[in-house]
Every structure is written in C-alpha cells, then in structure tokens.
Image (cartoon, rainbow, N blue to C red; front, side):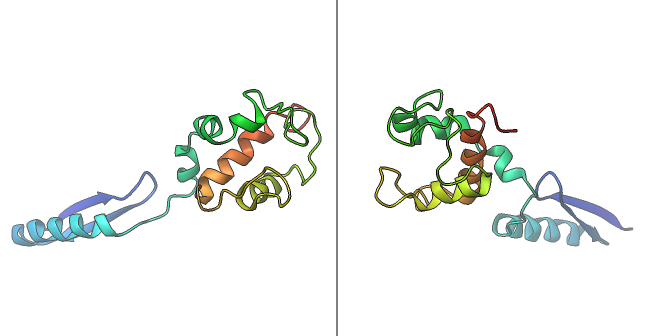
Amino acid sequence: MTSRHVVRFNRRREVALLMTSPLRIIAGSVVLASLAAFILVPATGSAQDKVDAAALYKARCLMCHAANGDGKAKNASFADGVWVHGNSPAEIAAVIRDGVKGTAMLPFKSKLNDAEVDALAKYVRAFDKSLK
C-alpha cells in the first residue's frame, strides 16, 4: 500500500513524499518536519507582500520626510515631484540602502533587508501623484 504525504513549504511550493509502509510514514514525517525547519524555499514576491511599508515608513522615515511625504528640509519631499537621485523604484531603493553622502540621508542597508528596502521605495514613490 502506498500513501502520499504532502508537506507545504509556502503558498506556492509543496513536496510530495510517497511512503510504502506505516513505519516509513512515521519516520518520513519526522525527517521532513526536521528538514522543513532548516530549508528555506523562496516564494516569488511573497516576502515583499508581507512587508508593512506604511509601518516601516512611520518608524524610519516619518521624522525627516513627514507623514504625507512632504518633508520641509532640502530634498526631503517626495510629493513635490523633484527627485534629485532618480524616481525609479531601483534608484529610490539605492538611496535608501546606501544613503546620500553629505546629507542627512543615512544608509539603511544594515537596518533593513532587501524586501523592506524595495517596499519602502515603492511606498515613498506613491507620494508623488505625477508618477504612475
């Protein structure tokens, strides 16, 4: 008799394990449960979906860039349509990650992971209503 066990690693991927005896089913389940704790299977786009960009903005950016993105310091506004370092998500992410020398914009690469940086870049870009 063959039984099929499916272990779901995330929303998009699962592993099917075929077992032929009850003893293998128990042993296989224990091994799979142990392995699942150590194996990281990336889910396309799901890490960014889980990032709360609004909360990150409030915690990390609000002080300089204001609640509605119209920071009053030089080049601190996202809403005025002036993007000194570029307005693409990749260019904005680079500024968040690396900061801007000689300004108050510090690098966040040691404080935020890539998914958080990308989510923040898209979030702050949305303050400029002229961009689509």
